[in-house]
Length: 303
Image (cartoon, rainbow, N blue to C red; front, side, top):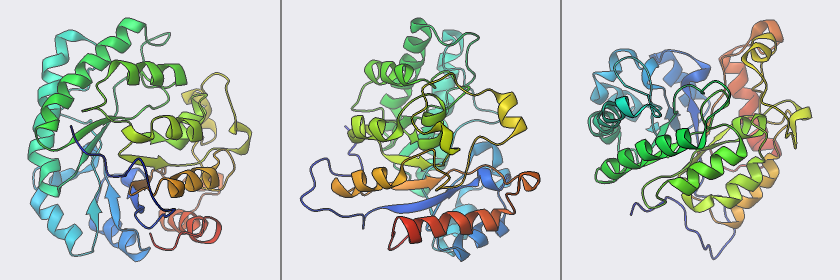
C-alpha cells in the first residue's frame, strides 16, 4: 500500500505542510519563461500536462535540472497527448492504456520523484456513463494502479466535467469500484462544483484517498449548485473557471478542514488561460490575483 502524503489523525492544527503549485494550463506549451514566472511569484511547484511538455517529454532530466535551478518541484504531470492511449472504457484498448501509463510513470514521473499520477479518463459517453462503463474505467485504473504502485506512484483519477466521471454519484461509484490501497482521487474544486457536487464535502469524505488537490473557483451562482453540468458552448461563451475568491467554492472551509487534519498535501492552482476579452488580463496578472487571495484572505504564510 502506498502511504498518502498527509496523516489521517493529526495531533495539532497546522497548514505548514501544505504547498502550492501552478498548473501549466494557464500558459499552454511549457517554456522557460513560464518557469521563471512561477519562480518569480514564489510558487514552489509545477504540474504540467504531458501534451504540452514539448521536447522535455523526451528529455526529462533536462527539465528536472531547469526546475532544480529555480527551486521548483514537479508535483505530477497529467496524462494525455500523442502516443498515450486514454481509452479507459473500451476493453479492446485496455492493455495499451495500461502499458502507456505505466511506461510514462517509469520513464518520466520517476525521474522527478513524483508520488502520484493525476489522470483524466477520456471523453464522456453520449448520455453519460453506464454502470458497465464505470466498471470498465475502474478495471483499467485498478490495473494501472497495481503496476504504478510497484514504482512507488499512486494512480489518482481526476473527475472533470465533460469527462466520463463528472457527477457526484459517478465519483462515489468510481471510488467504490477502485482499490483504495492503490487508487487515489484528485479533487478539483471547480470541476466538482460545476458537476453538481460539493467540493468541501467530497474532500472530507475521501480525505484519506486524496494525495493532492486542484483549486479553481467558479462564479458565485454555482455555490451549492446541483443542476445539470454547464455545456462546452457555455464555457466558450463565458469562461466557467474563475480566479480564487470569485465565490462559487468555499475555500475558507476547505482551508480550515485541511488545517484541522494537519494536511501535508500539494495544492495546484489549475487555472485556464486568461481571456483578455473577458477582462482577465495576462497569466502574470492571474497568478498575482490568486497569490493575493491565498495570502490576504486565507492568510497562507508560505506558498
